[in-house]
Length: 312
Image (cartoon, rainbow, N blue to C red):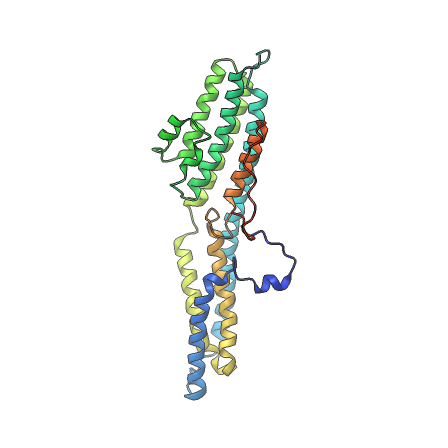
Protein backbone atom coordinates (compact mmCIF):
# COMPACT_ATOMS: atom_id res chain seq x y z
CA UNK A 1 0.00 0.00 0.00
CA UNK A 2 1.33 3.42 -0.92
CA UNK A 3 1.74 5.60 2.16
CA UNK A 4 3.30 8.71 0.63
CA UNK A 5 2.62 12.06 2.24
CA UNK A 6 0.26 14.18 0.21
CA UNK A 7 2.01 17.47 0.74
CA UNK A 8 2.54 18.46 -2.90
CA UNK A 9 -0.20 18.64 -5.50
CA UNK A 10 2.32 18.70 -8.33
CA UNK A 11 4.16 15.67 -6.98
CA UNK A 12 0.92 13.71 -7.11
CA UNK A 13 0.12 14.97 -10.61
CA UNK A 14 3.56 14.06 -11.96
CA UNK A 15 3.95 10.78 -10.08
CA UNK A 16 4.45 7.60 -12.13
CA UNK A 17 5.17 4.66 -9.79
CA UNK A 18 2.08 3.23 -8.17
CA UNK A 19 -0.34 5.10 -10.42
CA UNK A 20 -2.42 3.93 -13.35
CA UNK A 21 0.20 5.01 -15.93
CA UNK A 22 2.37 1.84 -15.88
CA UNK A 23 -0.68 -0.21 -16.89
CA UNK A 24 -2.30 2.27 -19.29
CA UNK A 25 0.64 3.88 -21.10
CA UNK A 26 0.73 1.41 -24.01
CA UNK A 27 -3.03 1.54 -24.47
CA UNK A 28 -2.93 5.34 -24.53
CA UNK A 29 0.00 5.25 -26.95
CA UNK A 30 -1.99 2.94 -29.26
CA UNK A 31 -4.94 5.33 -29.22
CA UNK A 32 -2.60 8.26 -29.90
CA UNK A 33 -1.14 6.48 -32.95
CA UNK A 34 -4.61 5.75 -34.33
CA UNK A 35 -5.65 9.37 -33.71
CA UNK A 36 -2.55 10.71 -35.53
CA UNK A 37 -3.14 8.42 -38.51
CA UNK A 38 -6.80 9.46 -38.77
CA UNK A 39 -5.84 13.14 -38.40
CA UNK A 40 -3.16 12.79 -41.07
CA UNK A 41 -5.58 11.23 -43.53
CA UNK A 42 -8.16 13.93 -42.78
CA UNK A 43 -5.67 16.78 -43.19
CA UNK A 44 -3.52 15.63 -46.12
CA UNK A 45 -5.74 13.11 -47.91
CA UNK A 46 -9.01 14.99 -47.43
CA UNK A 47 -10.49 11.95 -45.67
CA UNK A 48 -13.80 12.73 -43.99
CA UNK A 49 -15.41 9.95 -41.91
CA UNK A 50 -18.63 12.00 -41.68
CA UNK A 51 -19.33 10.72 -38.17
CA UNK A 52 -21.08 12.96 -35.69
CA UNK A 53 -19.69 13.23 -32.13
CA UNK A 54 -23.19 12.77 -30.66
CA UNK A 55 -23.06 8.94 -30.34
CA UNK A 56 -19.69 9.18 -28.61
CA UNK A 57 -21.06 11.80 -26.25
CA UNK A 58 -23.98 9.59 -25.26
CA UNK A 59 -21.88 6.45 -24.97
CA UNK A 60 -19.20 8.30 -23.02
CA UNK A 61 -21.69 9.47 -20.37
CA UNK A 62 -23.12 5.97 -19.94
CA UNK A 63 -19.65 4.41 -19.93
CA UNK A 64 -18.47 6.78 -17.23
CA UNK A 65 -21.45 5.84 -15.05
CA UNK A 66 -20.87 2.11 -15.51
CA UNK A 67 -17.16 2.47 -14.75
CA UNK A 68 -18.10 4.35 -11.59
CA UNK A 69 -20.40 1.53 -10.48
CA UNK A 70 -17.70 -1.07 -11.14
CA UNK A 71 -15.04 0.94 -9.30
CA UNK A 72 -17.38 1.32 -6.33
CA UNK A 73 -17.82 -2.45 -6.25
CA UNK A 74 -14.05 -2.94 -6.39
CA UNK A 75 -13.46 -0.40 -3.63
CA UNK A 76 -16.08 -2.08 -1.45
CA UNK A 77 -14.10 -5.33 -1.76
CA UNK A 78 -10.83 -3.53 -0.90
CA UNK A 79 -12.34 -1.72 2.07
CA UNK A 80 -14.07 -4.83 3.40
CA UNK A 81 -10.75 -6.68 3.23
CA UNK A 82 -9.09 -3.86 5.17
CA UNK A 83 -11.79 -3.97 7.85
CA UNK A 84 -11.38 -7.72 8.14
CA UNK A 85 -7.65 -7.41 8.74
CA UNK A 86 -8.32 -4.64 11.24
CA UNK A 87 -10.66 -7.05 13.00
CA UNK A 88 -7.95 -9.73 12.83
CA UNK A 89 -5.51 -7.40 14.60
CA UNK A 90 -8.03 -6.68 17.36
CA UNK A 91 -9.15 -10.30 17.71
CA UNK A 92 -5.61 -11.66 18.06
CA UNK A 93 -4.95 -9.05 20.74
CA UNK A 94 -8.14 -10.13 22.51
CA UNK A 95 -7.09 -13.78 22.29
CA UNK A 96 -3.68 -12.95 23.78
CA UNK A 97 -5.28 -10.95 26.59
CA UNK A 98 -7.66 -13.79 27.39
CA UNK A 99 -4.86 -16.35 27.36
CA UNK A 100 -2.84 -14.32 29.85
CA UNK A 101 -5.87 -13.69 32.06
CA UNK A 102 -7.54 -17.10 31.93
CA UNK A 103 -4.86 -19.77 31.71
CA UNK A 104 -4.31 -21.05 35.23
CA UNK A 105 -7.37 -21.64 37.36
CA UNK A 106 -7.91 -19.59 40.50
CA UNK A 107 -5.76 -20.79 43.33
CA UNK A 108 -3.45 -22.73 41.01
CA UNK A 109 0.20 -21.95 41.61
CA UNK A 110 2.04 -20.37 38.71
CA UNK A 111 4.32 -22.87 37.04
CA UNK A 112 6.64 -23.17 34.09
CA UNK A 113 4.06 -25.43 32.43
CA UNK A 114 1.41 -22.69 32.62
CA UNK A 115 3.81 -20.10 31.22
CA UNK A 116 4.74 -22.44 28.39
CA UNK A 117 1.09 -23.13 27.62
CA UNK A 118 0.35 -19.41 27.42
CA UNK A 119 3.35 -18.85 25.19
CA UNK A 120 2.36 -21.71 22.90
CA UNK A 121 -1.20 -20.41 22.51
CA UNK A 122 -0.07 -16.85 21.78
CA UNK A 123 2.43 -18.19 19.25
CA UNK A 124 -0.38 -20.12 17.61
CA UNK A 125 -2.34 -16.89 17.09
CA UNK A 126 0.73 -15.43 15.39
CA UNK A 127 1.12 -18.56 13.26
CA UNK A 128 -2.55 -18.36 12.25
CA UNK A 129 -2.01 -14.79 11.05
CA UNK A 130 1.06 -15.62 8.98
CA UNK A 131 -0.62 -18.71 7.53
CA UNK A 132 -3.65 -16.65 6.51
CA UNK A 133 -1.40 -14.07 4.87
CA UNK A 134 0.49 -16.71 2.87
CA UNK A 135 -2.74 -18.43 1.86
CA UNK A 136 -4.43 -15.24 0.67
CA UNK A 137 -1.37 -14.33 -1.37
CA UNK A 138 -1.02 -17.88 -2.74
CA UNK A 139 2.58 -18.12 -1.46
CA UNK A 140 3.62 -21.76 -1.16
CA UNK A 141 7.37 -21.57 -0.55
CA UNK A 142 7.56 -19.69 2.76
CA UNK A 143 5.96 -22.06 5.25
CA UNK A 144 9.27 -22.29 7.11
CA UNK A 145 8.35 -18.89 8.55
CA UNK A 146 6.10 -20.80 10.94
CA UNK A 147 8.94 -22.96 12.26
CA UNK A 148 9.68 -20.74 15.33
CA UNK A 149 5.96 -20.65 16.17
CA UNK A 150 4.77 -24.26 15.93
CA UNK A 151 6.12 -27.66 17.03
CA UNK A 152 8.21 -29.38 14.35
CA UNK A 153 5.86 -32.36 14.03
CA UNK A 154 2.83 -30.13 13.58
CA UNK A 155 4.62 -28.02 10.99
CA UNK A 156 5.52 -31.17 9.06
CA UNK A 157 1.93 -32.40 9.06
CA UNK A 158 0.69 -28.90 8.22
CA UNK A 159 2.35 -29.00 4.81
CA UNK A 160 -0.11 -31.68 3.69
CA UNK A 161 -3.13 -29.62 4.74
CA UNK A 162 -5.03 -27.77 2.02
CA UNK A 163 -6.32 -25.17 4.49
CA UNK A 164 -3.43 -24.42 6.81
CA UNK A 165 -4.97 -21.55 8.84
CA UNK A 166 -7.98 -23.72 9.67
CA UNK A 167 -5.71 -26.61 10.65
CA UNK A 168 -3.87 -24.32 13.07
CA UNK A 169 -7.15 -23.04 14.54
CA UNK A 170 -8.49 -26.57 14.92
CA UNK A 171 -5.38 -27.74 16.75
CA UNK A 172 -5.59 -24.65 18.98
CA UNK A 173 -9.16 -25.57 19.90
CA UNK A 174 -8.01 -29.06 20.91
CA UNK A 175 -5.25 -27.62 23.09
CA UNK A 176 -7.80 -25.38 24.82
CA UNK A 177 -10.09 -28.37 25.38
CA UNK A 178 -7.25 -30.33 26.95
CA UNK A 179 -6.42 -27.37 29.20
CA UNK A 180 -10.06 -27.24 30.28
CA UNK A 181 -10.10 -31.00 30.91
CA UNK A 182 -7.04 -30.61 33.16
CA UNK A 183 -8.61 -27.74 35.09
CA UNK A 184 -6.28 -25.04 33.83
CA UNK A 185 -9.22 -23.06 32.40
CA UNK A 186 -12.65 -22.63 33.95
CA UNK A 187 -15.75 -23.40 31.91
CA UNK A 188 -16.82 -19.81 31.20
CA UNK A 189 -13.26 -18.82 30.36
CA UNK A 190 -12.94 -21.74 27.96
CA UNK A 191 -16.16 -20.64 26.26
CA UNK A 192 -14.82 -17.09 25.89
CA UNK A 193 -11.56 -18.32 24.37
CA UNK A 194 -13.43 -20.61 21.99
CA UNK A 195 -15.68 -17.72 20.93
CA UNK A 196 -12.59 -15.62 20.12
CA UNK A 197 -11.17 -18.52 18.13
CA UNK A 198 -14.46 -18.66 16.23
CA UNK A 199 -14.08 -14.98 15.37
CA UNK A 200 -10.66 -15.75 13.86
CA UNK A 201 -12.10 -18.44 11.63
CA UNK A 202 -14.99 -16.14 10.67
CA UNK A 203 -12.47 -13.53 9.55
CA UNK A 204 -10.60 -16.18 7.59
CA UNK A 205 -13.80 -17.29 5.86
CA UNK A 206 -14.72 -13.72 4.90
CA UNK A 207 -11.25 -13.14 3.44
CA UNK A 208 -11.48 -16.39 1.49
CA UNK A 209 -14.85 -15.29 0.13
CA UNK A 210 -13.33 -12.09 -1.25
CA UNK A 211 -10.37 -13.94 -2.74
CA UNK A 212 -12.39 -16.73 -4.35
CA UNK A 213 -15.27 -14.62 -5.67
CA UNK A 214 -14.04 -11.87 -7.99
CA UNK A 215 -16.30 -9.45 -9.81
CA UNK A 216 -18.17 -11.53 -12.43
CA UNK A 217 -15.96 -12.23 -15.44
CA UNK A 218 -18.72 -11.26 -17.87
CA UNK A 219 -18.96 -7.78 -16.36
CA UNK A 220 -15.19 -7.27 -16.45
CA UNK A 221 -14.68 -8.38 -20.05
CA UNK A 222 -17.67 -6.40 -21.28
CA UNK A 223 -16.36 -3.23 -19.64
CA UNK A 224 -12.86 -3.73 -21.06
CA UNK A 225 -14.24 -4.27 -24.57
CA UNK A 226 -16.52 -1.24 -24.51
CA UNK A 227 -13.70 0.99 -23.25
CA UNK A 228 -11.34 -0.33 -25.94
CA UNK A 229 -13.84 0.08 -28.79
CA UNK A 230 -14.86 3.54 -27.60
CA UNK A 231 -11.32 4.89 -27.22
CA UNK A 232 -9.89 3.39 -30.43
CA UNK A 233 -12.79 4.57 -32.61
CA UNK A 234 -13.12 7.99 -30.96
CA UNK A 235 -10.77 9.69 -33.49
CA UNK A 236 -13.22 8.92 -36.30
CA UNK A 237 -16.01 10.67 -34.40
CA UNK A 238 -14.20 13.88 -33.46
CA UNK A 239 -11.74 14.49 -36.31
CA UNK A 240 -14.21 16.57 -38.33
CA UNK A 241 -14.90 18.77 -35.33
CA UNK A 242 -11.46 19.29 -33.76
CA UNK A 243 -9.21 18.73 -36.82
CA UNK A 244 -5.50 18.77 -35.91
CA UNK A 245 -6.30 18.74 -32.20
CA UNK A 246 -7.78 15.23 -32.52
CA UNK A 247 -4.77 13.41 -30.99
CA UNK A 248 -4.75 15.73 -27.98
CA UNK A 249 -8.48 15.40 -27.33
CA UNK A 250 -8.49 11.64 -27.85
CA UNK A 251 -5.48 11.04 -25.58
CA UNK A 252 -7.10 13.04 -22.77
CA UNK A 253 -10.38 11.12 -23.06
CA UNK A 254 -8.59 7.77 -23.40
CA UNK A 255 -6.45 8.51 -20.36
CA UNK A 256 -9.59 9.12 -18.30
CA UNK A 257 -11.42 5.98 -19.39
CA UNK A 258 -8.40 3.65 -19.38
CA UNK A 259 -7.42 5.03 -15.97
CA UNK A 260 -10.87 4.44 -14.50
CA UNK A 261 -10.85 0.93 -15.97
CA UNK A 262 -7.49 0.16 -14.34
CA UNK A 263 -8.62 1.49 -10.95
CA UNK A 264 -11.33 -1.17 -10.85
CA UNK A 265 -8.84 -3.91 -11.75
CA UNK A 266 -6.30 -2.70 -9.18
CA UNK A 267 -8.74 -2.62 -6.26
CA UNK A 268 -10.59 -5.81 -7.14
CA UNK A 269 -7.91 -8.09 -5.66
CA UNK A 270 -6.89 -6.52 -2.30
CA UNK A 271 -4.66 -9.39 -1.12
CA UNK A 272 -2.04 -9.23 -3.87
CA UNK A 273 1.42 -7.67 -3.88
CA UNK A 274 0.81 -4.65 -6.10
CA UNK A 275 1.65 -1.20 -4.65
CA UNK A 276 -2.03 -0.43 -4.00
CA UNK A 277 -2.90 -3.77 -2.40
CA UNK A 278 -3.26 -4.20 1.35
CA UNK A 279 -0.02 -4.36 3.37
CA UNK A 280 -0.54 -7.88 4.72
CA UNK A 281 3.14 -8.29 5.57
CA UNK A 282 3.12 -5.13 7.67
CA UNK A 283 -0.13 -6.01 9.45
CA UNK A 284 0.94 -9.56 10.23
CA UNK A 285 4.26 -8.22 11.53
CA UNK A 286 2.32 -5.77 13.72
CA UNK A 287 0.34 -8.65 15.20
CA UNK A 288 3.50 -10.65 15.88
CA UNK A 289 5.23 -7.63 17.41
CA UNK A 290 2.32 -6.87 19.75
CA UNK A 291 1.68 -10.45 20.83
CA UNK A 292 5.31 -11.32 21.49
CA UNK A 293 5.70 -8.17 23.54
CA UNK A 294 2.66 -9.26 25.55
CA UNK A 295 4.72 -12.31 26.51
CA UNK A 296 7.44 -10.03 27.82
CA UNK A 297 9.82 -10.87 24.99
CA UNK A 298 12.36 -8.20 24.12
CA UNK A 299 13.41 -9.63 20.76
CA UNK A 300 10.08 -9.16 18.98
CA UNK A 301 10.60 -8.44 15.28
CA UNK A 302 10.50 -4.72 14.47
CA UNK A 303 7.52 -3.20 12.75
CA UNK A 304 7.81 -2.99 8.98
CA UNK A 305 8.47 0.41 7.48
CA UNK A 306 7.76 1.56 3.92
CA UNK A 307 10.34 0.79 1.25
CA UNK A 308 10.38 4.04 -0.66
CA UNK A 309 6.77 4.89 -0.02
CA UNK A 310 5.29 1.40 -0.43
CA UNK A 311 4.31 -0.61 2.62
CA UNK A 312 3.89 -4.28 1.82
